[in-house]
Length: 229
Length: 229
Image (cartoon, rainbow over all chains, first blue to last red; front, side, top):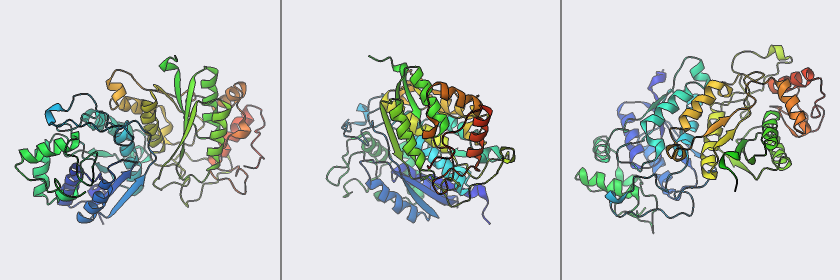
């Protein structure tokens, strides 16, 4: 009989951060269920990697929710993904790759699904250090979301609380990569690029730049760098 | 040029309450956009009524989001919808028709879509008086949700706040019906039944019972009562 609090629901994007989150849950011998979202992202390849990671880290289930998203972002619409060339050039403003309320929608699904699957702890790989400046990646958002669901679900009214777990929120990209390597993450099977071109990572979107900075600082070679994606 | 605060995004289920919310926005001469959700509900007829209401009340747009929902509710799964026969028999517990996090997911979509459409005010017909006891219909939830989105969206960080408008939250079903009648709502084009049987409202689910109580207290005949649905 598995202790309920040993169950983990992991939001798995197919990117580097959520793969590391998964590796943390595996190390902790959790009973892991994973979910991903097919929301019309142009970098849909990440869903293949999410599936691969969920198998590799022995998730008990992996469900991909197909959701009909609104537009307004360079990740889903015909808006050009910015090419900043250098990590120092990433502007401090919220970029056009911001998808309005994306993590709000994802965590909402996660909370409903966690209630359905009787899971208390929801893991998400948000990061507020080396990140693209999305407002729904910050600590304030996570706290507010947790408070909100704990006022609005049958589970919470019956005395069980949800916990949104963000093990990477204060990590630099370097620290995430070092931890992932230690935990056996195969980074060649993670996708970060917002805008793969001709089966290669573009190398110039914010996400590629932050990833490269992380591998450089960790003095590691990114196995996905020249790989066909 | 329309004042931004005159724009309204209305969550339209096709039921009685949201039709009345729509009529309130029309009376207030708002520029109305409506959204509905196709989430696998067994009472899908409500989406036809939502479309009808959006046309009747001259919404500028009406978008139906198709979303792949998790299970766990009598509204979406093969779980029997309770038949309580009398309104006094509706148990105080949260019923099996509760869909975990449904309004959380719906409002999350609404907040993202409102940001995309540059709308500040989101209207939802939740009601905490004559309702089925869902935790995500209560005032505490609405407040917590509003606080959460105002910490997590680009719009809010740029100084514009979302407001979740719940004009019916403290109304009895009778009061909602009386207001709707005054505002020209055609109740024959609203659907409340959780479980229509052979094209008729079942008359015995919580939603049918609460609706009947409202019409009785308003001394009105429900035009949908014996209608084919």
